[in-house]
Each structure stands twice: as structure tokens, then as C-alpha cells.
Image (cartoon, rainbow, N blue to C red; front, side, top):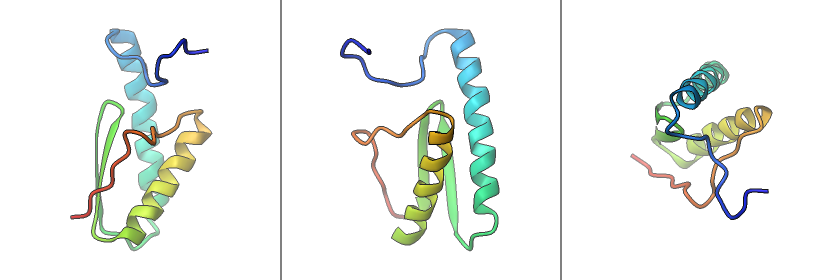
Length: 89
């Protein structure tokens, strides 16, 4: 029950920020490990809970997104479909 509010990592509280950063840093590490065996040219930037994924083609973007969504789901997190935008470089 969210009472009309969105579901996201709470921001503003120093303790919440610290816990969120620890969890997302761990998720970043898992994502990089899962992508090590792939032949993908990519760059991922994250600020708090906002990810920016840069890749050369749609197939690589789909692979990265699938792996990220899978990792987030394992930790009971998800990507907001409303805020999701994919940009090719």
C-alpha cells in the first residue's frame, strides 16, 4: 500500500542514502561480472538510483537491460517503465 506514492529508494535521509548506495554498488558489481563474458561495448553510469546505459546497438542494449532487470528482481527492485528511456550512441 503506497497511498498513491511511487515505489523507489527513499532519498533525503543520510542513512537511507548510505544503505541504497551499498546495495546499488553491489548490484553494479554483479552486473559487470555477468557482462564480463559477453562481447559488448558499453558504458554504464549511475547516480543514486538513476542508470544511464550507453551502447552501440539495440541487441547489446537488450542484453544489458535483461541482465540488469534480472539482478534487480533478485533484490526485490524494479525499473520504472515510465522513466525508462533508451538512447543509442
